[in-house]
Image 1 (cartoon, rainbow, N blue to C red):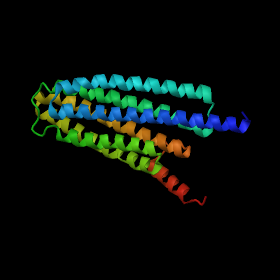
Image 2 (spheres, one colour):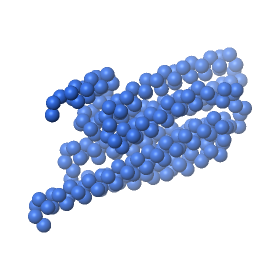
Image 3 (tube, rainbow, N blue to C red):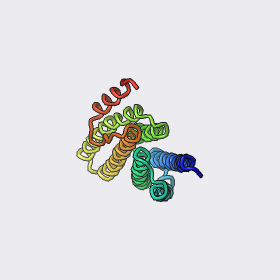
Image 4 (cartoon, helix red, strand yellow):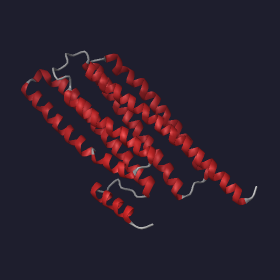
Length: 243
């Protein structure tokens, strides 16, 4: 086999390997989305068995992280990827770490929801948590969509929503503190609610991280400690430059 043919063969095999990995990452993301939805539904519906089942899903998520990590390590060892391809693998490894942590937070929510199911539900059926949960779930879904399409513009838009999640978190925390001060009997429930919204806030952070990895994959720019306004401006300037 001539050198040029060998290079094309290696390139084709590498692309096939990476497409397989990308598909597995998206499958892992889909399972994480289902897990998070189950955890939130267990709280809203007062279904303890649904909350407890989330732990089984988290075990599957953990297994997927290990398998994808091992496949990435194999590709690094056997394909010797160039700079741009190496960047893609690094971003994938970071992405699955954040997906696994979203699964962990979902498991926490499921466990607390199972405990809350034994108590009388409030009249508003945890309306504030439901609203915050919807925002966070949409962030995770849209971050994965940006990953699938390597859409850095969408990644920035999704990352911006993390501020809204932080505002919702702070508002619910203040509300819980007020309830505890007014009625000491509400302390146990309020503390559990505070733990749930803390987990949701962290899920938002992990979704934002995935968006930052998308930008890194597309542009080779590490934006983890950069203001979103600066990131957006840089991307717009890059898009306006002539080819």
